[in-house]
Amino acid sequence: MKKIIFHDWHTIEYQTAWDKQEALLTEALHRKFKEGVPAKNRFIFCEHPHVFTIGKSGNDNNLLVDKNFLKKIQATVFHINRGGDITYHGPGQIVGYPIIDLETFDIGVRKYIERIEEIIIRTLAEYNIKAERLKGATGVWLEPHTANARKIAAIGVRVSRGITMHGFAFNINTDLKYFSYINPCGFTDKGVTSLQKELGKPVPMQEVKKKLMHYFVEVFEDKKGRTAL
Image 1 (cartoon, one colour):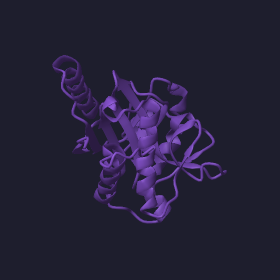
Image 2: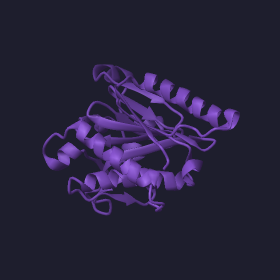
Image 3: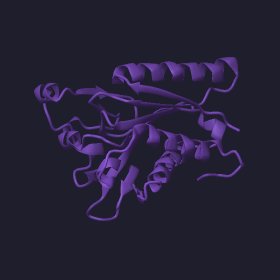
């Protein structure tokens, strides 16, 4: 069995979480390449205060408000070292940061992203919500091939010598108006949604985290030798 260590950082400033991720990544790389022992595979949950993050391929023009407005809505902006364009993190959103060695699971980056999508798709199925992938648009979508296509989870990762950081943002009880201040992931023609909006009621965050942990184990630990994806 491939052991996964779960952490919950609860609500944490974005910079603090980024620094902690970098420290854990450094530790994992040191274990693997200096000590010659397996890296510890971790899956971290957290929430952030209002923040917009712009990935390596991001365009500043996809942030639609100025510095004064950002101050008014109590939001900050970070240019970060993950893939992807701009996204939003904030209260009521589960952010997941897996720091894992892909070699442990014998998968590459594309398969890794597909597995993260699968965890969220299976979690949403527990709420009788059919979620899917959209070709050419990483993340998890509802009705992706219709005019009502809307994203419920964004994914943006960095992989350093086979070890991952950053991860996904899953809208649970998120204040969706913050997405109106950006072109989410660079899209101007697709919507954004949350579990609360789809169900018409708020959902306990801990309940969703437990389901995500269950499916992370199911998809990644692969205890029976099956290939999840």
